Image 1 (cartoon, rainbow, N blue to C red):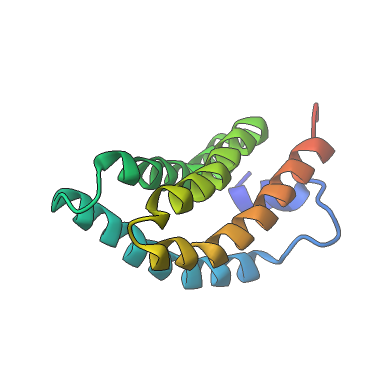
Image 2 (spheres, rainbow, N blue to C red; image 1 turned 120 degrees about the horizontal axis):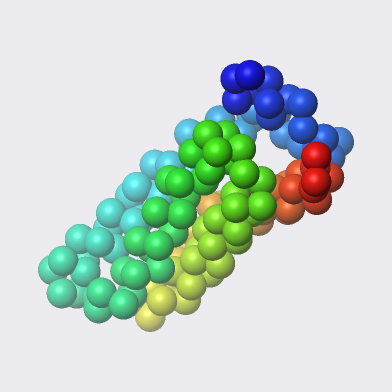
Length: 133
């Protein structure tokens, strides 16, 4: 079965956004992520911020990129839940790490944090509702 048929067959809370809504939100967030994360990495390469400041951004980027293959490729809900918790926590870590250097980058993470907070709650709910099935 294809990934969409699999996803549609999962039990989900009634407040689950439509896949098209999820896609639209990511289309808005990815440019923010690219601009702010790119800025941080450039500043780290230039020596303007320590590499330890860029570390949570790098971890977040990797965790964000592997979520879809874990969730829809492996169809592993528990592992996807762990992954999204890493994404969520590294957004907080990133904002704290960059705050003293470039506050605007930390503030720009707010929409990303809000969305991933909702997505994390959704992922936890879906995993719980489908545990053992």
